[in-house]
Amino acid sequence: MDFAARYAAVHGRDARFDGQFVTAVRSTGIYCRPSCPARTPKPENCTFYLTSAAAHEAGYRACRRCLPEATPGSPAWNLRQDTAARAMRLIADGVVDREGVPGLARRLGYSSRQLGRILVDELGAGPVALARAQRAQTARHLLVATTLSAADVAHAAGFSSVRQFNDTCREVFGLTPTELRARARHTERPGGLGGRQRVDADQPVTVSLRLAARAPFDGAGVLAWLATRALAGVEDVSDGRYSRSLMLARGPAVMSLRPAGAEVSVTAHITDVGDLPELMARARRLLDLDADPVAIDAALSAQAHLAPSVLANPGIRIPGSVDGAEMLVRAIVGQQVTVAAARTAAQTLVTNLGEALPAGLATGTVTTLFPTPAAIAEQGEQWMRGPRARRAALVGACAALAEGTVRLDPGVAVADGVASLEALAGIGPWTAGYVAMRALGATDVLLTGDVAVRAGARELGLPDSPRELTAAAATCAPWRSYLMLHAWRAASLKNGGAHART
Picture (cartoon, rainbow, N blue to C red):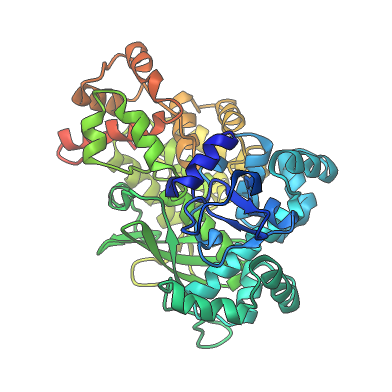
């Protein structure tokens, strides 16, 4: 977007662009979201920044009226595959807090100095400032959404001390943490009721909060997808809530997600509150909360055959993953079989190789962690059924994951991830593309060789031959993953709700 387009969005108070850029106003010294209800500033007083960190670096503080830090994340960081976008995904995942700037640079293949220059040129702020802005956003969210103490919020958001936390709040928001929390009680609906709840030092921390999504949001559709593939012990879907175990940086956790309208209620049971940002980032990726549904639905609706499905299913989302390694394992065991068969094969691995959750985390339905790549590489073949080539592919892929020669974290570019997967024995375009979509958030995957995709295309009135379907779908780029979800849904309805593939 150029200056004129951004100013038009601000003049029209267009909420679709909230989180995609901020408007810094020289006459007031504050920055706002595009939909800020305040009087529109004069063009000559406006400077637009892609990140709030750039506005902080330029000396601006966040608007107390429109609360720019309360918006969903920018869809650009998932859509773009350049170094800056990959860095933003890793920063949101807490990499700088855990590994420092050198760790972030190493993951992206640059020196710290090179990475700093790239981020300043592209985003107007270096990695330290971007991580600081992410901490401030997380801290504000936790202050408003939970009853955690200020010390717990500081630790959870990644600050090294309460003093650093207090100073950052004053600089970014112009308020102390206590004032931020008090003001939120009058200006916002609290995001959750839970704070730190711990019986003793050996018990997990329980926190409840809410995550925002852009409307429309088809949360029920994502839950239906996950329910069809849920693995007993690891996952549970009931009463409109999805619960599962996952391993975070400081230990295991269990999270429960309940979509409602344009937000998701989250209950997190975690070993350490410092893992909250990572858990929140994984929940956002799992439910594709930072997608731009208005842009996606508009692009798909331009294809006449898709318009009725988009109208019936607005805000469709990509069912993501909380762990790329797990997604690759599930994709391999699902090669050329039905969803039910894939679930049975993955369940066998969970039953025999999954690690039990600590007693304080385990519930009646979520009791086990998905097996690690190292465990499957060592023992997976004896529990895996099916063709020898598939068993070998599973063991080989898990060995590569365990050794680190294949990575599927948020910092991996889609093209690089696909290339590394297809270089493995037994991994073809279907598996690589499916994993790219669900583990790396690839928005433009179209698996024309998938039987269910072609069946769904027929139901939607699209051609079902791979070449013709590719041509017909060209106008839907870069959102063809969402087209594919509409096709899978159409095929599922035709089959009475049973997906033909994983």
